[in-house]
Picture 1 (cartoon, rainbow, N blue to C red):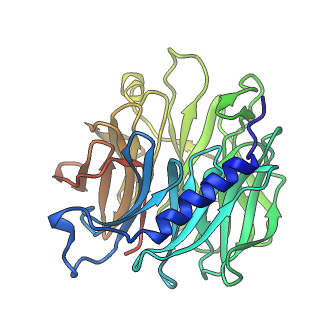
Picture 2 (cartoon, helix red, strand yellow):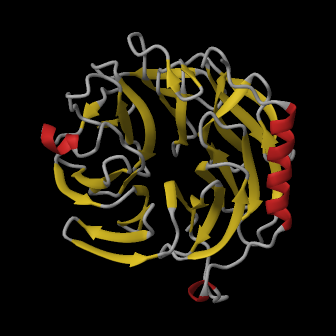
Picture 3 (cartoon, rainbow, N blue to C red):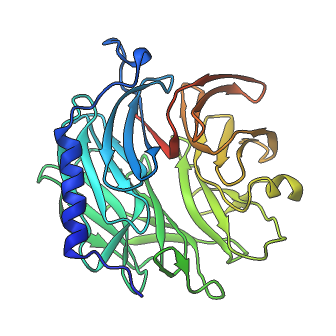
Length: 362
């Protein structure tokens, strides 16, 4: 049965989102009441059974304020010039919410049309004029990048297509090219329907939506999903393995335009720890860090050699961002790890049940 956004569902989503907008974004406890705290990180979180929010945090991952969400969120896009953030619903999502991360003002609730759903991720153009969202056509999973005009109150003005089924994350490169992690999976809700014929890819579009490059991995059961770039020309992609349960292929790869996807290396028993799934990725000049909430761990790879150099346990390992040569890592168990190098890290407790991803607004 195809999942549809009914009128009742749409009304409930809008009502819940607007209720969240009308409720002041309250600080979390004593540690979050300082006016000196500056927003630096935003992620979605689980507040309790059936209760979800977007959480604004300081540079150490300590929460400042929250915005209630009508359903579970996933990725967040940020626009520092406007102080805007966009929280996307977890796939197959029916909404995204735009808010001001400094004031807590709710700016826009966008509901998916009856023929579309959101895949949980989006990104602003480098100039901040456009918001790009990964979307799918209901019934076919045909991939769509929705283009929204920021200055026109986030009205949808275009759709980019022609790159495959099931896009998950989209990022923008310094040269304005869009890179899409195309999962290649046709789904009904969250149920996969085409595992034998799935066709994932890493796809590059120019700013007009034209496909300029598309590469894949040797194993078509490696669904390309989560992305990052190193601030220059290197793209990192993390995969979900949809093949044999007892096989443990590489779940991370590097790519630069014009080249091949280069899998990062670890032993099969080390890849087994990731439980066939990479969630969030970030990179510095030297290191690549990737998390796995399903595997309750994260790994650090040398960017130069492509070899795994550290594998660390972390319950419900979730978001990661990089800044000034180090990483911040979040956890569904509330831990926030500052990882300075493979052998140097610090852990604090944030009191937030972080969910999947972080976005940086330094």
